[in-house]
Amino acid sequence: MKAAIERGLARAIAWALGPTPAIRLESFRWTLTLALLVYTLAWTMHASEWLSPAGYHISPAASRGLQLPVPLLGPVALPVFLVLYIGSMVAILLDLRPRAFSYLVFAGLLYVTAADRLGSFSMNKLALVSYLVLLLAPWPARTRDQPDSPALLASAWPLRILQATLLLQYFGAGICKLRGDWLHSSNILWLQAQDIYMTELSAWMIRELPTWLWAGLQHGALAFELLAPILFGVRRLRPLAFAWGLAMHLGIALMMYRVGFFSFSVVAYYVLFADDERLLGLRRRLQG
Image (cartoon, rainbow, N blue to C red; front, side, top):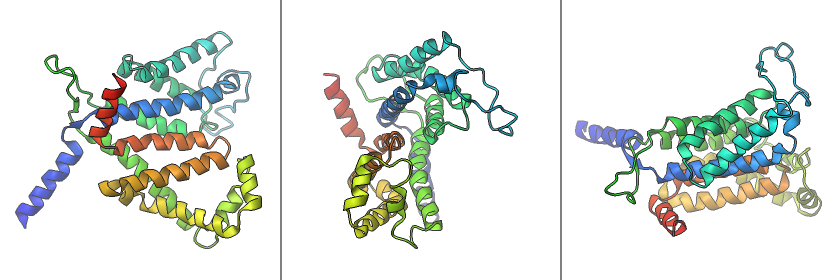
């Protein structure tokens, strides 16, 4: 019995802290940056309202300490900042010194989040945590004698933390729904689709689809969130997790205006559960 416990403990430590292929973390840096770039390009059209004195900014005193005294950008500094910030994301996507440019992206994301802390979205804060983990990760250096060999992380902890982040998001959201009215009423999703985020598609669905179908969508989303730790944790169930989750987030993106940016950022985490060999094969094909 003692030997079995020791073996189990050794396996758990190796799973959490042992060396692991870096391909999933490298792929996640790419997908996370792509989601952040799409989101950033959307709000850049109104960047002056967010980052310059032209927009409304609550004072630190009026916000009771929630808003930080961050200096805003002038008409010259604003475009320079955007070029550096967005350009750093593009550099990461093109695999041009991605580790170095990740520091610039993190610094830019930290600034835009702090410039209007009360108005910043959940995506800003989640991306900050994810980039911090990526910056602290023990990135490997490929050896000169085997430059094409798969790189290994010295420790798997960054990968495990980011995987847990996705599962906690889903399971926590499911628990919050259970504590609300999602089990007591089958019209919650139908009512939420009529909120300020309603799109033309959701308006059509509200008019045309029967309420029992809305109830099915509602309970299907709740079931996915509560079962996410099992669906993503069990390797054989991951194809179902990917298909179910993608369908749910696609529906959210189509029915709720601009909430799709957050859905895109959540789906970016899926690559953390992908098969290493498949990701390596995809990278080899893309590299020619």
